[in-house]
Image (cartoon, rainbow, N blue to C red; front, side):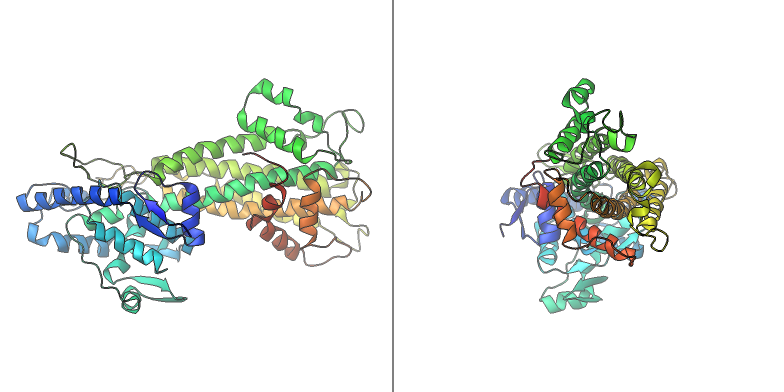
Length: 508
């Protein structure tokens, strides 16, 4: 596999995916090494001259006014990592941890942080060897960056902490010994540079964004299947209507829907069965489209943060400036994560309403709960309950984390982003949405069993056939969780989008 070259400026979401999921190799660009060495020389000069510079010759946070003797600068950095490694909760997933390591290396590669190139080489060696630090998911305020999680990331570089290595959870020291590596000794500013940043919240939001691509397209495909099952009216997706409003996501979604419904024998014209559909069918472009617009906004924010310098202070060697500021503050990602949570929750919200129309005989011409022998059989009655429960849970999760702030470090750090909390909640919304869409997918396919002679649309046939490879038509009651899990796995693996996309160029 072609290596990803880190220069601090050009990392993409696609490359992020290759590293965290496909274990693509990563290397430092020669230009990055040169830039890093320049800023490192500046740090060493400052230490020799005994100048007072935050985090290099002083303590941290409230202790920024405490000057540290230059002979204790290495001890200062080690103490920083040890004291800040106090996260709690479940360990982050391996993809999340790999993302954190990659993003921290890329931020340092910009050459504004004053670390030796060998520090980043060491971090990338752990990434290549699949030595993954155990990073607890809780304990970050999102400013000054993700301090506790990044301290746990740094511990194994020093032969401390815990890692996952060779399918075991072992000490960082044992892992380095097995891999033939000597623990790193941090020098002036290096500990601070490793932990002062937004890499946890950015990694988690990037993972969610990758899922969002898949979910938004899957939602269009599944919705089109439901439109067919309910004899919907595609005239509501006419391009004239959507161009009249001008919202880009809405225009794109309407185009997707018409493409997916091409040649369908299930859809109807206005007045044929009803004059117009309920909102959950008629307003698919408006609702799904608004979530697509949100996705585009969050993608822009994230792409910038993938290549951001987020520690403090920053060293600008060419200009001869060392500037202490607040680039570690996670507000941009915090707001983006909250916004994406809301956008994805709304995809689930409208999906559940379509599921209700599929299973409720008062809202369609379909048998109650999609079973031929209602009463003896409950059919897919409780699948809608599950979707409703998850939709309600997502509404609770969508309370924005970014509106909260609690002062820390003796009120020196008196406004924080809570971005790591927002990004963690976002991933739970994503996970719930897979199941909500899976319920609609299963119910839409079952509804189509009652009109077997009619031709499915261009995308619907592919979607139906794919599900039927995993879930047979419902003829008698069975354990419903198995149907949901099978459909959700199809969605999580991206199989639905991969099946439909080559023949029908859907857009985000």
